[in-house]
Amino acid sequence: MLYIVSLYYILCDWSGVSVAMSYIDRRFPGCSFFRRLLHVYRLFVSQGRQLIDRFAIISDEEMFNIQVYGYEQFLSLVQDSRQGVVLLTAHIGNWQVALMALKKLGITVYALMRPEDNLEVLNYLHIGHEQENIKIISSEQHLGGVVEIVNVLKGGHVVSIMGDRSYGFNTLEVSFLGEKAWFPYGAFTIAAATGCPVVVLLSAKVSPSHFIIDLSNVLYLRYEEGRKNKRQQLQQWVQQFVTLLDTYVILYPYQCFLFHNVWREETKNKVG
Image 1 (cartoon, rainbow, N blue to C red):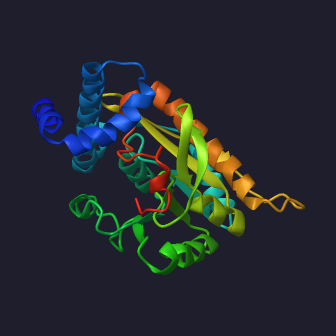
Image 2: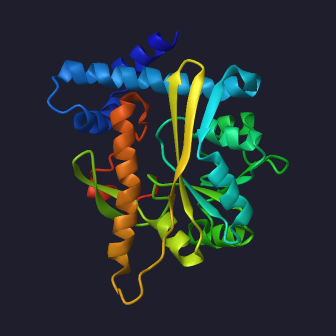
């Protein structure tokens, strides 16, 4: 059924196809229109599988083999850091399954998001419920939830922030897939101000029942004394993150679910 549903979206949802094309055009340059359309179709099928997996892991947690790289280092940071940890995620791979894996390991994560996003999915996965390990910080609060984020980090907790959605934060120009793109720098500003480490979370589905979660990339952000241009330093840090994404989409081209045009400067101050 997934193949039929994906074909329906290819034929009937041209707005969705158009947004996906902004990524496909850069990941697979030089392709004909029909070949690019085939790439979009494969991307839609991959997204459908990931959506099914979100619910499958709730029904049977043993259904998947989830391999975590860098977990011991991450656990040490969570236990030892009095400043908390920023967990930097993106719409790449199945970040929801990755958060569920952390939940299974007993780590509480505060996720910055709009509460109304995918409300049915959030309720089904029990994300944001008081008794659960995954809680929500609303990006629609005053200052985009920054005050609550800082308070949670000061309590030594983990805060998950999307590194490819602005949520009210401004963006900086970096290079992604060989072209100028604009990514938000709010998470880096918060980390540098609070002194907490940034752990980049990447996940990939490598077989029908096998996921890889990578927590091995850790950034320690400190403004250099004597340098007045903090924006330039922020740009370097954002580029480090985007370079990791660049490497990821080369390996897993059909697990990039940005579905908004980060290559358009007009999107830089909009809420994702």
